[in-house]
Length: 77
Image 1 (tube, rainbow, N blue to C red):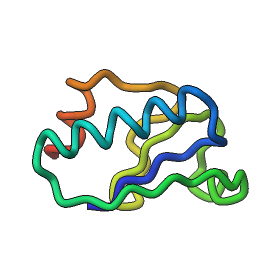
Image 2 (cartoon, helix red, strand yellow):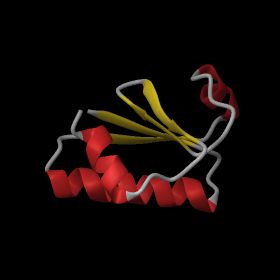
Image 3 (cartoon, one colour):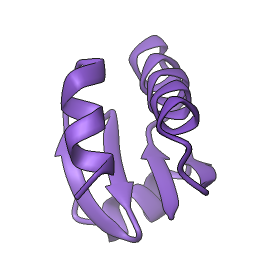
Image 4 (cartoon, rainbow, N blue to C red):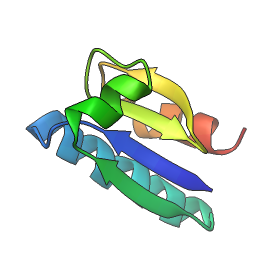
């Protein structure tokens, strides 16, 4: 699974990256984590609010840091 965190590097973006990585490790998911900080790349996803989370190229969360339980549900779909 490719996990992409879209954000300019703010505290929420960093928090989202750490949270999603911890949940993926806890679930035993084989994943690659990519942090996308370039505003043009972020906008190419159609994202105007950060942080955002994309799984395998599909945006799942925009403008917030989901709880660990929300992340578990997203990663197990």
